[in-house]
Each structure stands twice: as structure tokens, then as C-alpha cells.
Amino acid sequence: MANTVIGSTIVIDGEISGEEDLVILGTVKGQISLRENIVVEREGVVEANVETATITVHGSVTGDIHATDRAELRADCRVVGDIHAPRILIADGASFKGNVDMDG
Image (cartoon, rainbow, N blue to C red; front, side, top):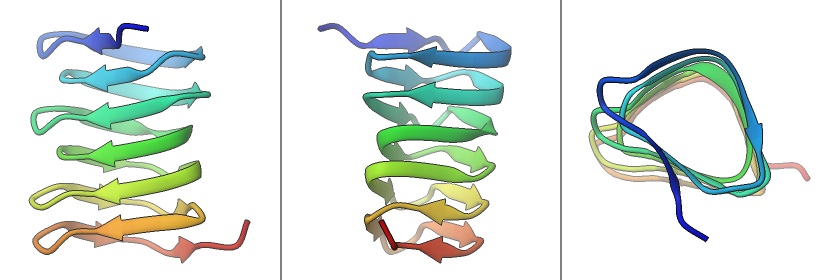
């Protein structure tokens, strides 16, 4: 299945839900609830609480992250909010301010 892409000039203010992979290059504000995977690219900005299977952050996320599989914070990303996931990867150079909960 192809990824759904939110382009770099797109701003979404509201709720996103579904069962597909999502790539964010633009800005999303509100709530994201997806069964599959989310990638926030370097230019992507998320100001939302996120529920997903996995999330990989290269850009910026402000809000709590709830991942059923894993959360990956890549070098040069910025995350402000709590992370709840059984597996978490925080790369050297990532900026993270919040709490971590790895209990199932």
C-alpha cells in the first residue's frame, strides 16, 4: 500500500485517523490516530497528540506520543511531550523534553 503524504506546503488543523502509513512534510495540528506507521520528515511539524504503531521523527513533534510498537527520534529532531512505547530509540543529536513510559 502506498504512503499518504502531507506535502510541505499543506497545513492541517483537526483530526487525522486511518489505517495507512503517513509521511508528514507539512504541518499537522490537533490529533493523529493511525493503526500503521508515521514518518515526520525533517521539514515536518506536528503539534498534536499521536497514537500509532510506529513513529519515526526527523522533524518536530510537540505533543504526547503513544506507539504500540516503537518510537524513533532521529538526529536533529525535536520532540516535546511524553512518549509511551515498548521500544524507544533516541539518536545522538536528537532533542527530547518529556517523560518516557515503556510499560505495555
